[in-house]
Amino acid sequence: MQKERAVLAGTDPATLAELGRLADTAGAEIVGQLTQKRLKPDPKYFIGSGKLEELKALAAANQADLVVFDAPLTPSQERNLEDALGLKVVNRTELIIDIFAQHARSREGKLQVELAQSNFRLTRLTGHGVQMSRLGGGIATRGPGETKLEYDRRRIKKRISELNREIDKVRRERSLRRAKRRLSHLQLVALVGYTNSGKSTLLNTLSRADVLTADKLFATLDPTTRRLRLSSGLNILLTDTVGFIRHLPHQLVTAFRATLEEVSEADLLLHVVDISQPDFEGQIAAVFTVLEELNCAVKPMITVFNKLDCLGKDPEKKLLEKYRPAVAISAYYGTGLDKLEELLVKSLSQPPEQPPATAA
Image 1: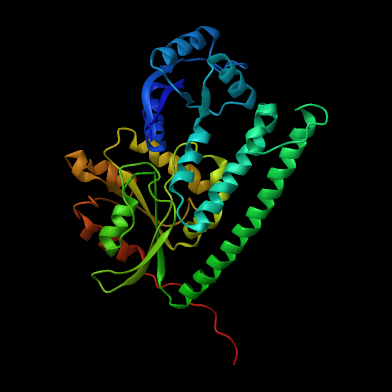
Image 2: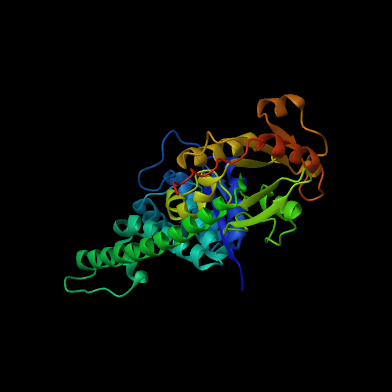
């Protein structure tokens, strides 16, 4: 299948690199990019009229199929841009949701992605108007306006209710599985971190699991839990969770709440950080933003600086002190895992809380 040719547009050249990786993961070929610094977005086109003409020329010169904006465009801005450029316009939120849709494998993952898509579409109805015919046939008793809009809104809301019921069922099933795990008195350790930080590689290395790993953003969506026996003899449960990213769409946080409950239930978090990234501390801040939304930012945590092999040197001592307890490793080569296990044992030295005794 031929890749769509995409031009990237935004306000900050630094963030376009990540947008490019997102577009590449979604299956696009990047053929150009444009940035414009503005104090506030243009209400009609997000960018100024002069930059709009420049963008139009850039897209035409590179035979682009779509333009990807690194910003949450309003429905009217998206519609106006599509009309002016004669091309499909996609914003960052749509791009991330599309990647999740491509990578969802389990029934649970597909349900959660569809919920995110439906919630996003509901917010765009008034902006697309007659263009929402792609969502299904409408009744045109007074033309393609209000009647069809209300029909589409009811249709999407009905599907959202159905999806929420299905996901509630998944949440109850997960709750039962967690209750059974608690009976084993094994402590749960959850891997969290920015997407592509190496969480799945670390899970595979520690537990000899076979979780998909790839140098792509959001390569794995479905949580995987493995029982792990540390060299000290301590047995734990280790869970890999979906990766985070800057400005993770609220629709995805909401839809994946059943999955992210694994983080809420964990006794300890392993925050995996790709230390080879120039802005790794910005990625740390982005992860904490999502953890705060999940009310998990105060949980016991070990910061695991990963991809030491890509860095080429040990991190400065003051960095490990700043994020203490912290350790530097290479999950791919197994470097530093002995120190990680020492920290795990130390952090989990307190026995898990026993369930209250019941009267005979």
